[in-house]
Every structure is written in C-alpha cells, then in structure tokens.
Length: 48
Length: 238
Image (cartoon, rainbow over all chains, first blue to last red; front, side, top):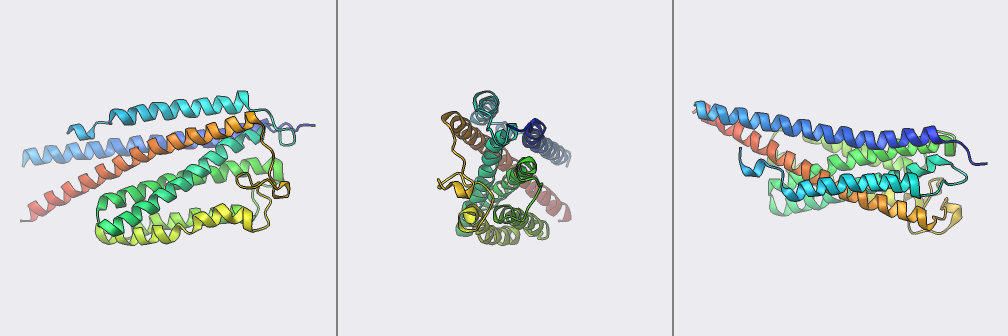
C-alpha cells in the first residue's frame, strides 16, 4: 500500500520555493539599499 | 542615476522565463508525474531537490572559473562574479540539504544520517561558509580577492567529491545519473517522471542564470558605491 506522505511533500516544496522567494527578497532589499546609498553619495557630491 | 542602473531588458525577459519555467516544472511535478508507489507523494520533492542541488554545484563551478579568471587578469569584476556564484550556490545547496532531509524522514525513517553523500554535501556547504567568513575578515579589496580566489579554487575539490561520493562509497542515497544498478538505490523513471525531472532541471538552470545575473549586478553596484565613498573620503582629507 502506498504510504500517505503528503505532509512531507508539502513541507519539502514550502522549503524550496519559500527559500528561493526569501533569497529573491534579500537581493531586492540589498539592491534597493545600494541604490539609496548611491543617491545619497550623489547628492553629497552635488552639495560639496 | 545612469541607464546602467536600470535592469536590462534581457534580464527582465530571463526573470519572466525563469518564473514561468519554475511554475511549469511545478505543475509537471504535481499534475503530470505519477505518484511513486513505495514512497508516496513525498517522492515528488526529489525533482526540485535534485534541481536545487544541481544549481548549487553550478554556482560553485562558476565561482571557480571566475576565481581562475581573476588570478589571471587581476580584474576585480571576476572577484564579484566568483562571490555571486558562491552565494547562490550556498543558497541552493542549503535548500537541497533541507529538502533531502524532509524526504528522508518518511523514506529512511530519519531526518539525517551520516551517509557519504549527506556528509560530503554538508562539508562542501561548510567549506563555502568559510569562504564568506574569509572575505569578511580581509579589508583590502585586492588582497581579499586574491585570497578568496585561491580558496574558491581549492574549495571546489569538494564538489566532484560530493558528486562521486555515491558512486565510490557504500551509501543509501539513490544514484540516478550514470548508474542502472538497483543495489545503489536507483529507481527506474517512467517517461512522465523523466519529463518532470528534466523540466525541473531546465527551469532551475534558467532560475540560476537569472539570480546569478542579479547577484552580479548587486555586487558591481556595491563595489561602485564603495569606490565612490573612498574617493569622497580621500577628497575630504586633502
């Protein structure tokens, strides 16, 4: 008889897809921070 | 801000293709691939587990090629390329380890065992964790790049060792590529399973390329900001 391992399957896909989404979010947040830093430096140069 | 800060159209297209590819692979796995009789539905995790592990090893391979290129050219862009490969490789290998552990619980009746494949994969992940620690401990960008490149090349020896571990040592981990010996845990894949398997590999390869490109762009932008900051600080001291 085939065992019911549905809960483990769901957990496996949640980990993989969730992990990828978290990494994509981290890339987005870091990119946004770098853009902000670049703008700040640009503004500072304009002022000086 | 310049045009170079905008995301290239090709990258946006790649993002869309990668997203659609992963969605299509997921649908193939869930709706098209049959349920394996002895393991049940958890066997479906295997398709993404292998694809994630493949992408992880691809990341380490790219990191090594970039490291060799850096040592040859001393161009810091190769250092950024190498770091991008390591970071993404670590993310995918971590996902492979965790998803493998979830698969193992109902199939092997344990979350973890010190099997050669599991052990060498964990060692590989730890070796690349040390790569990041090494980078964090060196301030000078040129010295950091040189040390990191040498470390990435030496560390890459763990990748083929992990790949062949299930073929060289006695192991309970299934051997799916390059073996037809059922005693090695190989299970026959039906044509529908093969479609889900190769579809997942293709989708994760596309995803890897898209993420790698984004990570490289991030590294370049960080490097440019750091350079600008140093120039302003140097100008202020004069």
